[in-house]
Amino acid sequence: MGIGGALGVSLVDWTNGLAIGTAGLGPDGDHEVGAADATELARAVTQTPSFADPDTGAPPAEDVIVTSGGNYHLLRFVPAPFDANVFLYLRLDRDTANLAMARLRLAAIADRLVLS
Amino acid sequence: MWSDTLAPTAPGPAAPPAPPLPSVPSVPPLLVASPVSVHRLVPAAGGFGAAAVPGPYLTAEPVTAETVTAEPVTAEPVTAETVAPGPAAAGTAAAPPAPAPRARRAHAAPLPRRRRSSCAPATTFEAALTDLAADGSTGALHGPGGAVHLAGGLVVHAEAPDAATVGHLLTGSGRITVRQWEESLLPGTGRLAEQLLGSGLVGAGELELARLAATLDGAQQALAQHDGELRFDPAAVPVFRLARPLSVLELRGAIGRRRSLLDGCWPSAELDRAPLRATGAAPTRRTAVPHRRRQALLAAADGTRTAPELARLLGRSTYGTLLDVRQLAAAGLLTAPRPAAVPDPPPAAVPQAAPPDVLLPPGPRSYDSSDPEVGLLLRLRAALEAL
Image 1: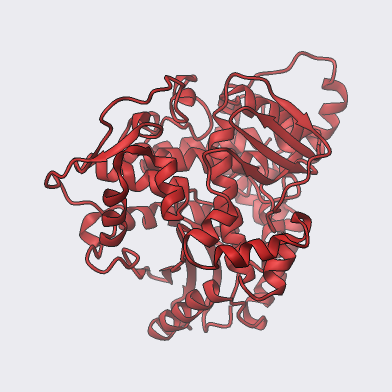
Image 2: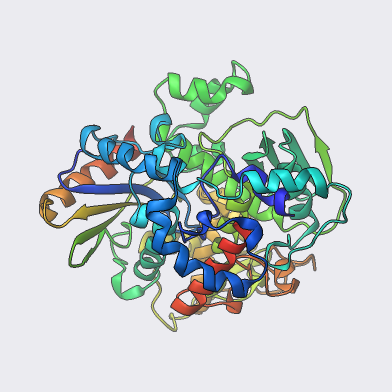
């Protein structure tokens, strides 16, 4: 939650919609609903061949970014050595956040998450 | 069933499809006798909810707001600090009904069990597990096809013969060697997690992910058991414990979503237990399965191995393998030369036989949760059940 403008973050498994860990506030104060909704988005991306990267064997997508009038929503898929289908879901306040910086910071966190 | 399903969820976060309307808590539960009255009450409650609801819900917000700005980044949201039901979780779990069911329980004991259709467990195993969890039991519920471990009514571990274990996941993926795994076992299984973390072989976040994957893999098969003798062993000690235990309701919701994702790819469970063979044909459509995983799966599918065996061979979770198998089958790349020898009801088939009004039904075709109106109805129902 040290990312500038962060409102809330959760670690979500997109195969089952569980919020494994949370910090800050979820959308409308509810991380569980936010996780379930973000899961639908993550599934749409991971299960759609057009977004897949079939040649590298890497995770199908890196980020999903959704912008709205007041917020940025940033989904970052976490690379895991086994079938852990998880992503970090970060919500940012659009007025105070720097989307590019936040994306880089979130990517670094996602990488550390597996190693640590 | 009121208290049965609610009691264990009270300390943890609320039901996964998420009892959505924070305003519902402010409605005195007993006033809500019918869905109709809820429709009327909810908007009204929403109006004064923010101002009128005292207690944890409001107090939680300032606290979390502080943590948002003041706390340093936690690299692993899976640490104890974030996983423990923090202020935010307390907010969501300001489970409105906490007092009501308790009072009701005292009186309701002699009454016949009320089967609430939307929450009714789909299998005998689920029913038994729900009852045990409602009593805050500790121990393991064993069936012929898998076991689920409870601690204080919360799910801490699950295992099944066909499911991947933490050991399979860590060693099969090459994360640690079999030798390192065996050495970690030496001090005794009770200290396995401690040993793995202490030796620096595996990170805490990674271990929790592996534990969760293994637990859900086991639970998916265990929950589908509908016949066979069930046995509860209060003395059983699981090899691993989830750092963040799941309520039974959460577990059932999670398994339901996993099944619906599977059935969305290929709505038949016939491939789950049958030996698989690569067809060698050109794909009839593109798949989202990464190239490397696809090649590995197709190379290993020799007409004798079933999906769980392929998962073990490749060091992957059974679920992840099944997901790929179904996608490849949908693209015409994999087939089952002969149907599964055992005409057992495959995992997804049993719940499908249940009435379609199960919470987060395993049969995914019943509801399209992406439809906002259906989603609203599901959330409304979840809110009603939370009362």
